Amino acid sequence: MNAAALLHLLQFASPALPIGGYSYSQGLEAALDAGIVHDADSARVWISGYLHEVSARWDGPLFWRLLKAFEAGDDASVALWSERFLASRDSAEFRAETIQMGYSLTRLLAELGVGKRDMLACEVGLPSAFACAVDALGIGHEEALLAMLFGWVENQVLVCVKSVPLGQVAGQRMLLSLRADIEQAARTARSLADDDLSNWSPGLSILSMRHEVQHGRIYRS
Image 1 (cartoon, rainbow, N blue to C red):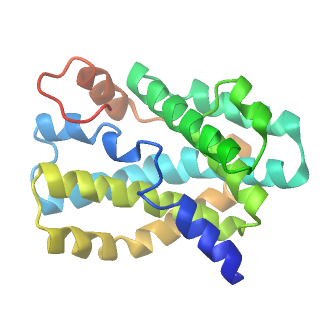
Image 2 (image 1 turned 90 degrees about the horizontal axis):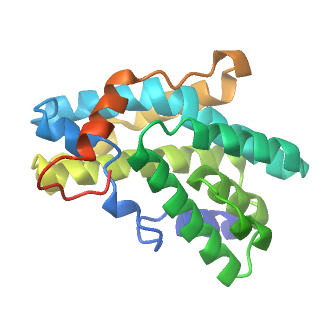
């Protein structure tokens, strides 16, 4: 990976990117409220389980397909996998989250002169917008997939640091311990055939729906 591509990846995978990622917990705040996550061990179980059962089997594989579709200039496949990702957001919060972040990233790319400006004309999920940036900036696909998965894990750990709460060192220790899980999730995401994809996670869906009416919440999902 050349230096320019690496620097582009670091910029667009950074939590400092102004697209609002820090304001979402993706169901974790509801799990905290229900007592499912209550300490470092239960937090790690939650993050690892989500990573292998959801990210590795649905979010990651769809992102991988979007990367390949953008590379091939296959607009039909970009539209297909974008639509399937949006259709898989089975709570109002999950759908609003990806559309808001996707729109924010697409608008940022347009203002920076990167990617396709016509993407602003339709609802775009975050994976589609990120894949567009990866293609426009010549970032390697395997590195981009790892960055996407790491970014999700990092945000979950930060939620735990703030809300469990965990100490900063405990959060970094957890993030470091999840390295092998992230690598395995990336391998799974790259290897699954279309018929093997699955976002079956009813418990997470129920928690997300409960979060929509949860009292005293900090995060938007």
